Amino acid sequence: TMARVRRAVSWVFAMLAAMLLIGLLPSTATAQATVAFTITDARIVASSGLARDVDGDLYWTANRSSRQGVVYGLTPTGGVRGTLNYRADPVDVEALAVANDTLYVGDIGDGGQRRSLVTVYVFDNPRATGLTVTYGAYDFRFPNGPRDAESLLVSEDGRILLVTKADGGGEIYAAPRSPSREGVNRLTRLADAPAMVTDGVFLPGGEQIALR
Image (tube, rainbow, N blue to C red; front, side, top):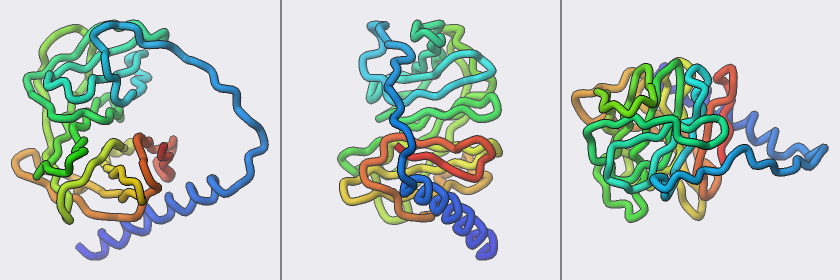
């Protein structure tokens, strides 16, 4: 309904306002870069996205445009603990997210802006055991034509946001709160985003987001 749409728009604008305020505040200290770990496994040739799995004590990553349904579970030191395999042929995996012991893999990249739809694969209780597992999948369509996206954000209550990547500025889109796995879901444009966004995450509490 229109009331729900207005509430969703207000919610996202409130988050964006908070993010903008934080971005405008002067920095009080300069953080020194620290390398947490280095990925050296030869199978991971183009790590595209990284999601922390607190319950599993690991990080999930995947190769971009590998055309293979494989997600790698990394230890806190960067080694490969194992893989999660699924029978699909993703086009361009660009982002991953973990929320409530569910892993989301975003096959959402479209540098040529030719895809009629993008897909988010969903895995409940993911484990890096090397097994081939079943999955759910949501297909999404942008309302104003194909878009290239590299950012997938999932809130604690399972709300999915996609952020597009563009030189002059991207856009934030929201999936339906209960997307269908049977057909193509239409995304709703919520707000503008900064230029060249390549990743993002919901901050603890679910009322703010951070974009990179």
